[in-house]
Image (cartoon, rainbow, N blue to C red; front, top):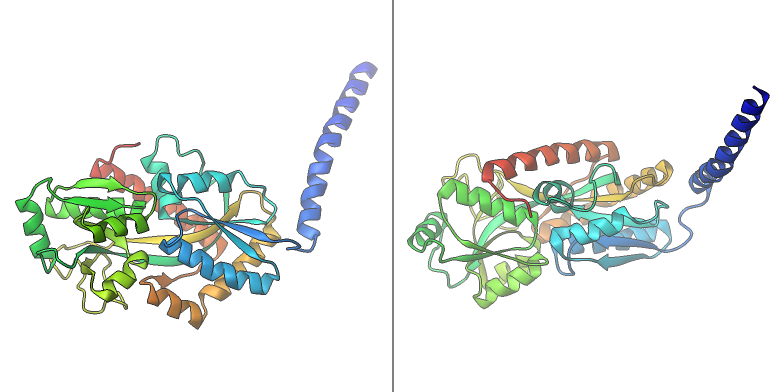
Amino acid sequence: MANRRNWLGAALALTLGVVAPQVQAQVQAQEAPWPTRPLRAIVAFPAGSGTDSLARFHGERLARVLGQPVTIENMGGANGAIATRAAARAAPDGYTLFFGTVSTHAANPNLRREPGYDPIRDFAPVSLISINPLALMVRADFPARDLAGFVAEAKARPGGLNYGVGNAGGIAGTHLLSQATGIQAERITYRGTPGAITDLLGGRLQFMVSDLGPAVEHLQAGTLRALAVATARRVEILPTVPTMQEAGLAGMDFASWNAVWVPARTPPAIVARLNREIVAIGDSAEARRFTASIGIISTTSTDEALGSFTERELAVWARIVAEAGMPKE
């Protein structure tokens, strides 16, 4: 019995010797001044995307209030999965932020057999930052002038139209439009929306269902034309463009979104500080003006609310994928 007690005591001492430094490091991380060095913000899509614009807007203002630079790292590709994997594997020390989207945290886990990360287990939520309306867009010289004319044109050329997608919002939005109207078209996938916009302008694509950010300047210049928006209400920056519901597609109400996360196990005190600062930025008049100018809506939340929202969106996307018969990649 004495030998057994000695063995147990030695094992406990060994375990404590391994665990204690880890616990101590976590406590010190929560108690130490933060931040004391630059932060990096991993962005799930390329420069010029709506996500990139939001990350740069928030990054500049976070740098001011935190007193440290925030470096933007764009990692486009795989519908945001490449960046999300990198963010999930980053050290949970408060020095890595992740600007993700509906693509990274709701769509990919339902569209990919092995996304390479778990959107709930591998991340600590910080805050929502935007709701992004989608629009059906064509080049200025496309023959149709409204949604009904577009559907007629597409049906007259079954499979003869190409469309581009740079994120999951575009994939689902086009699937929902196709289901509601019966049109058929060929999908071309891009690393991000800006590349698809370039090909739409160049005539390689005939249409897109996309978030407005990367297309705003072209819509305002008249080189692209929006035929309808997918949300239930009209978008402030496109007040004359009808909703798809107004154009006859009852029940069509779909939008994308953006949010900020940090790696799981980031100290709660740091998460709380980031939430306070990001909510203050997102709720400012400056943020509302900026987001309206690129066709999105500034939206904030508590960290807990973002966690619950993400779980609901995962369920929504499971239903969208099942109903649309979208194959897993």
